[in-house]
Amino acid sequence: MKVYAEVGVGNDTFLSTEYEEGDREYRVPSFVKPPHVTEYYVRIWIRKTVYIFSTNEGFKKISKDKNRFKLLFGVGGVR
Image (cartoon, rainbow, N blue to C red; front, top):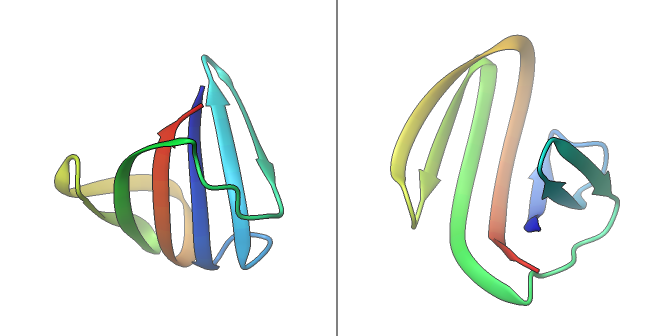
């Protein structure tokens, strides 16, 4: 199971954790650090463009269908 714990603005709460397993994903309103950290990242979502700066994948730019503003610092890992 992948775990993404995030701090910042744009999600429903300032602290949140997303769990992903296969096609399923859900978010809880608290910061739960993954037991095995595999990456740190900053995600900046401006309108339909998402910029991701990650220790694993470097820089990525992604286009989305939804207009949003998010500025998040995250810790990714596995459980």
